[in-house]
Each structure stands twice: as structure tokens, then as C-alpha cells.
Image (cartoon, rainbow, N blue to C red; front, side, top):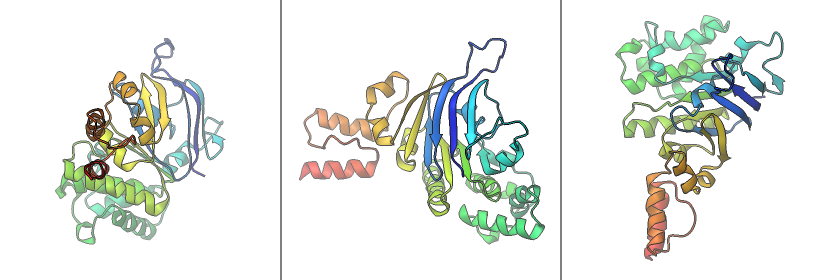
Length: 282
């Protein structure tokens, strides 16, 4: 149901100057249950692109289909689409506003028409998914730590039971330990629920560890589409567009150039590098 298909999508903020496109001729499909990373330099069109996926922006050219139906069909239910395709912007904790955690997370389901009882049940379920315990339910969200606030904000979207979750730089501003914990939780939510997740990030290390497929944007165009291992094996091409593969990948590539038999497989994580080096030393 949650398949998203983009066909030759272009977008210009200035319709009087269509040559100044922000997105140009982008086509791809995200299948139900995928965990996809979207990467690119600042200004590459990532944030503009994801705002098309739930209809916040309308393509200047091309078509977007959700579940097989064009979202540009006359009288298409865009509000319903936004419930099914949940978009979480950077620093979502700034959107918290209720007097308690449970009230804040219940707000979305109530807006969908759920009874207070069902909205609370959904909120409890969503808070459990992001690791927020019952001891924090009645606290003001403004009294929580930065990481806890972000989890509560994500829970507010999850409580609406979206089929697709889009996260724009969800780990921005978190320390390394907080990033690891938070992104691990996103991965666990994906694995437990089968939800489609699209993760926008500028961190190559993050996407190398947590996604199964990568879309690479450059100057408004989709430049590459493949697994992290396939994408990060193209070191020179990535460097040319100002993106750099994970540091550990460079390290192992340099060891290989120096004659250490670490193999020709692209290494993405510290754990993989440790294993490759240990094998070489044997």
C-alpha cells in the first residue's frame, strides 16, 4: 500500500523562471517496508524533494503516485495522505506544545478522529516504541532532555499510524552516543513494524550503518541509487560532488594501497574494518 513512485518530477520555486529548478527530472520508487537513506550536499534538493512525498509541495512537472494512485488526481485526499506519510522535520522537539507528554502524543490521533481512549492507547504504544517510559507521561515535555524531547516528537507522528515515516536529519545536534542510540531506535521501529522509512542525512557514517538503500542527490538531480556498499565503493565520484565516504572506508582503502591484504569489499563500519584488519594480520 505504501509504495511511492516518482516519475520525472521537477520543481521550481519561481514558476516565471522554470529554468531555475530546485528538483529536475527525478524518478524513483520506494517499496513498502524499505529503509532508504537520502543524501546530498546542502542545496542538493533533499528537503524540497521530501516535501513532495506527502503533498506539501506540488511538482511543477511530473507525477507522484502513492499506493498506485496519483496524488495529483482531482479531489485527492491530501490530508489523508499526510496522515499516512508522516514527515518529521529537523529539530521536531520545537513543535511540542502540550502540557504533558501523553497529551502531546495524543494530539495527532485525536485530530484523526480517534476517541480520547483510543488516542491515549496509541500514544502509549508510540511512546513505548521510542523508549519513553510511563514515569514521563505526565511530565511537561519542556522538562525533558533534548534526546527525550526528540523521541516524544517522533512518537507524536508514530501515534498516527503512518505507513511511511520520513525523517529530515533526525539526529542533528545530538552527541555521538545520542546519535547512535536514536538511530538504532529508528532501525528497531522499522524492523518491528515493517514501516517504510526514508532517512535524510548528511552523515555518511549514519547512513552506512542504518539504511539498506541510498539515493544520492546532486544539484537537484538523482545521481545514484543503490546499496550503501555500492554507493560508497564509488569513492572518486562521491568526492567530486563534495560527499565523502565514511572515514573508516578511506582508512581500509589506504591500507589496501599500502599492500595490506584487507580484501576488495567496501568496508562501511568500524566493526567491519576491525574484522578485515584482523584477517589480514593473521
